[in-house]
Image (cartoon, rainbow, N blue to C red; front, top):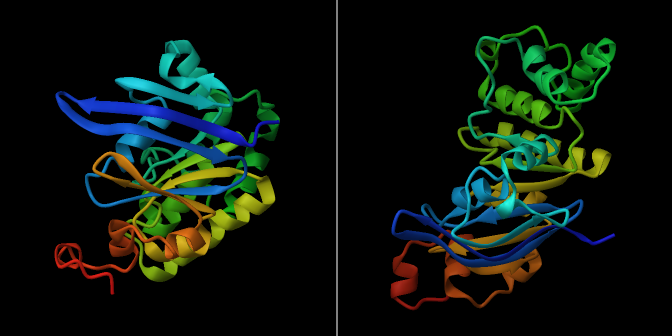
Length: 255
């Protein structure tokens, strides 16, 4: 079996005349936590939308389990999207539905799941993310961290091999963010799930990432392990991970 679950080759994307991604290439290995980082406006969220099939590239190729996402028709895209999990930055929960109904929705709509088992499966998925007993609560009754966990429970409702997570720690205090990092690590161990995570949280990267892709102005600046990042001589990489302002580069100071 190929070790790569995702292969991206020479991906180019535009918003109108503005080039957002410029020849991006990388691979994501099965079972790893792969984090996408970079400064604001570097193309992280745009890349994630292309990986999910929510946007079409100008050119280039995205393979998910050897199937070319970039040329799929609408039915093929829908089928592919039902086989992955997507956890949104805002959690993406429907406020008119209970937490349990939110988690059950993919099972009822897309999964070949015995209806008699759905309630038990919902309770199990919620217990995996530390929300046992929360199925009858409304999203508005949850804290920010709990909403993120509920969104993650829905993302893993159909046992996907791959989960995309957009800014999981955004808006969370350090304790909540650390708890979510632990949850992602636990799910990786228990379910062998591959995670592709867009983030800017340095502590999450240090704790959870197997490998990191850093974008800068739509280009791949670096891709490798945390150990390789710490040894990188690239100034922009050092600036990001040392949390230095732009003067750090303009003054030519490598510390």
